[in-house]
Length: 172
Ligand SMILES: *[C@@H]1O[C@H](CO)[C@@H](O)[C@H](O)[C@H]1NC(C)=O
Ligand SMILES: *[C@@H]1O[C@H](CO)[C@@H](O)[C@H](O)[C@H]1NC(C)=O
Ligand SMILES: *[C@@H]1O[C@H](CO)[C@@H](O)[C@H](O)[C@H]1NC(C)=O
Image (cartoon, rainbow, N blue to C red):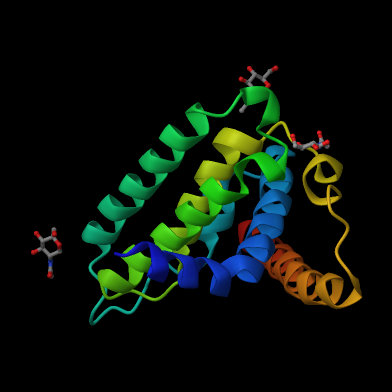
C-alpha cells in the first residue's frame, strides 16, 4: 500500500478514530470499574460477522499483526506520554487503519465485534491508567465535533447498559 493511500485512509478516519478512541476509553473505564470484557462481549450474540465471506480465523491473525505493530510503535514512546494523545495519535491512526484494511481484506465488515474486542484489548493494555481529562480534554473540540462525538458515545453507553441489564435479568 502506498503512502498516499494510507494518508487518504487516515484522513477519512480521523473523526471515526477519535470517536472510537473516546468510546474505547469509556468502555475501558466501565470495564475496569467492575465489568469484565467477557461479560460485555459474550452476552450479545456470539461474534457473527458477515458469515458468508468473513474469514474469522484470518481476521484474528491479522488483528494480532496490527496490535503487534502498535505495541512495537508504542514501545518507542516514553510510557510517561502514553496518556498524551498528541504523542501517539499517528501510531493510533496507523493501528486503526490497519484494522480496517485487514478486516476488509479478509471479507469482513469494519468495525465488527471481533475488531472491537481487539481494540478494547489494546486500550486496556495501554490506556487503563489514563483519565478522561488527560486524554480527551487536551484539545477541546468545537460544538459540532462535540455533538458528533457525544451522540455515538451516548448510544454506546445506552447499549452497554441494556446489555448488562439484560444479562442481569437473565441471571435472575
Ligand atoms: C481462512 O483463512 C485461513 C488462513 O489464511 C485459511 O487457511 C482458510 O482456508 C480460510 N478459510 C476459508 C473458509 O476461506
Ligand atoms: C502533550 O504533549 C505535548 C507535546 O509534547 C505537550 O505540549 C502537551 O503539554 C502535553 N499535554 C499534556 C496534558 O501533558
Ligand atoms: C498502570 O498502573 C499499574 C500500577 O501502578 C502499573 O503496574 C501498570 O504497569 C500501569 N499500566 C500502564 C499501561 O501504564
